[in-house]
Length: 464
Image (tube, rainbow, N blue to C red; front, side, top):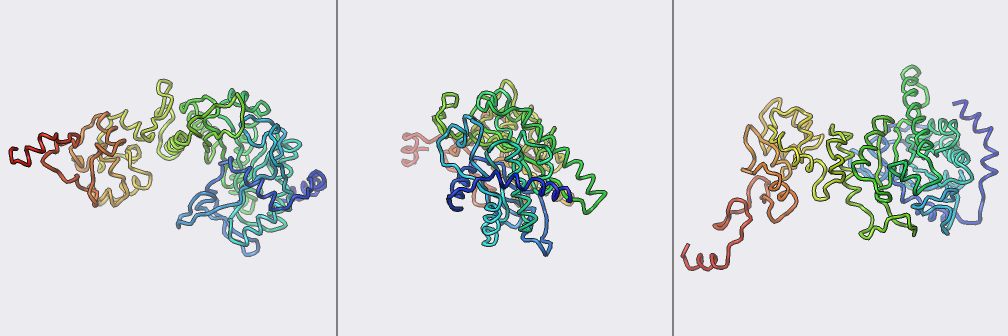
């Protein structure tokens, strides 16, 4: 870490000289810069497990950070702020763009440290998420962030979780040094395609964004080898890196977006790709009107598809194609895939390989693992599947247990879609999840038909 100290001493005077100290109070700055950070969603589980060492303050819990839950059910949060909302860029979708007349503020490194430590002592937070607008230049901004994190780690001895943004276009040496202090770093892709970036963020370039992303990936890989050889070697971005894409500001299809995400996972070893539904905060003719508000359901479907890419063995080309470029808003992506591939169903729970279990709607990663373990000693029944955690109201159309389906359902796309999307025609379950609804004289087997008025009168008169 000697090189960190050397760089710190060399550049301390430059950083301090450039920070403007205004008369604005710390709480006023916090109000402005916390509100400005709310559109940056690229923060979540840390993927880091670092226990307290007895001399520094705090630790880092692997279970999750910020809007997430740990393994024991705790909700863990962090201080999410911008270093500054001053910006030299004029991105059309951004509230902090240069041309907007909004209140501006800048935290000094000491102020961020003070807020973090005081909030931590009060048990409000367990870590810090620090992003920033671009003030003066990318290198200056990255230097300001580095100074802040260095003070927090070295002067204030903060040992908790820290997630910071790597600024595209900044000095690579600053990004490298910051990586030895942060648990996670992220570089926002901003928009899914280079064409969209050129249209709405003309000051930003795809190559400039991908360059620090590649640097962080290479640094993580090299550091893993160093840690194997030297156990006390400093860790470089031990929680991995992530990125964010804005959804709905430009006309890319879901097919294009998940292909970009798949490529990022494969080429840059990202931990997460975050999808942020476009919120129209500026009036600009280049921005879509969004009469229905932010595309939140579309964002939700993309997150579900992203989960399938990362944990369920799906490929982007299996979920969508050029003929079907958008997800079905009525079905989640796995259900949509299943009803379009009924030739592989029903799947026998007691014999199917793990990879096929993961493709059954209602069967998650944990329940698939439990099925694999449980069936070593017994043939599973539908009651067993319910106890294991399988969501039978979705899975029952696609599985058999010991060669039998749960109910005599049809393996037809229209029938299954109707039952998955509507409550009226759906198969009803009792409190134990294992029975049909109570049958009456007027049921026809599919629970669709309502008795006519004439039939009801005939029944009352005993004429059936």
